[in-house]
Image (cartoon, rainbow, N blue to C red; front, side, top):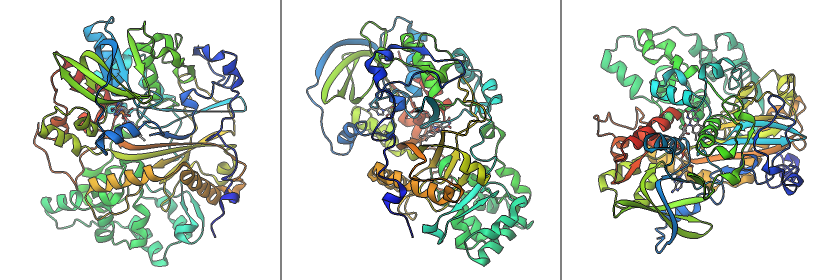
Length: 621
Ligand SMILES: Cc1cc2nc3c(=O)[nH]c(=O)nc-3n(C[C@H](O)[C@H](O)[C@H](O)COP(=O)(O)OP(=O)(O)OC[C@H]3O[C@@H](n4cnc5c(N)ncnc54)[C@H](O)[C@@H]3O)c2cc1C
């Protein structure tokens, strides 16, 4: 029987609606401290004040206040006419303060001179877009995690991107060599929840990835049908070539026109209850379920099955490029912070790539009238228009509709909003922009008192086939850029819940699935997410001494209804002719306005966000 909210500790005061930080420090004026904390002992710096954005908990990502104006514009057709003209004139206005927008500002100064006056506008209360930092403070200890974009798959970076990171002082090889974090893969598990499977069962040692030949006996513990358990074992141990006798085009059809789930049932002979185990296995990596991925796409991402393909297995081998990564303790938020530090040095004068993870930023410096670069938060752009050889940019801030002018503008925001804020965009281009529906993504960080329950169970993470978040793992072993939690420390420690929201229907086109999942995500309250993570932690760790009412110290839900950039998938998109793909049409310049964002590459990667910003600045005349 499921537990009541009271038994789950829903009434407990945690850092979601209230803060445990010592806010008296703010009153004493200590927020004026800028630069860096102690080199190694992150525990010694005083916690920042309650309004320091990275420390905010509760509903983050698309937090309340960040999206309502854009929805009024795009969904309700609200017009923001008669703006008040501000007495501010810039060389460049950037729409969107994510990695792409910040890179555009950086590159503009390189191309047009460091005296260029630049305004960056973003709708959130923190900069970075998906590159967000989640900072927890408890009992004098700071623990870091990330709220969105995570790592750098640097082996696939172009020389241009590598040179760009080098300019910021980032040594990706060193970051990579210092990385011990393995996304829970070093001690994996699968957790079956009582609501879905009748009883809570944790099976350490089993991984959804690869062939599991060393863990076959763990399958005996799965609470599924006996025939399902036997079929799963046969699947892993079989050496049959299911493509035997097929010609090249038939093989292509099986790999690229068959969904992974269909492959498992039709070609690997797995019954529904076993196929069901794999449906959420790619939620975090792709932002869609495996019924929407082709067999090839799923296997290239290390899901099992390639052992049944004979010689064609080579076509679906996962790449070393995506396996080898570098990362900061707050994910790619450190890149956003290094960019902001470069654009506006006063935010953290002593910060650099070696100590960026522990640098305290002075947000009061972001938007100073005397600085050449200004970054204005909580500002949603509702119109960008070419007027008299300039660009007039209208935005809403604190309920006021205001307008500034600039020589140039780079739109580094989601493409799907551009038709609404830039009505002069040609119709075919608008259609291409609307095609780029982002994949909703969900990252919920939970600060728990201690990692000991996980250690007792011998796990560092688990796949949860029946739950909202597909995976949960310990954040541990990212000791880079000045952040080094004490050795042998058992807690507090962040656990990350990772995935997306499953669409309510699978039998509809992908775009409709993504839109429906986004609607569900936005419709859930913080309490819904809280109840979910409490239920999971209680069921998974309760037997190992985890007290769900006592041991949860803070919860930060990073919801991204507009998450991964829309990339083309085998089952849903045609092979576009060069120059005719939606992203290529969508990013065409419009007068003095050019278009960046990872959408412009149809690729949900940091390197894409950077490259597209460089292109957008190069296109300005
Ligand atoms: C959960 C998650 C995990 C990810 N993990 C990785 C990873 O591990 N590695 C990787 O390389 N990539 C990852 N990504 C992809 C990530 O999207 C890119 O790496 C990169 O951060 C995208 O940057 P961007 O500037 O193009 O877009 P964004 O980060 O989306 O920035 C655009 C900004 O523009 C703002 N904006 C939109 N409309 C307006 C408006 N009208 N007015 C003002 N502002 C507006 C947005 O709110 C946002 O702040 C991840 C993404 C998500 C969501």
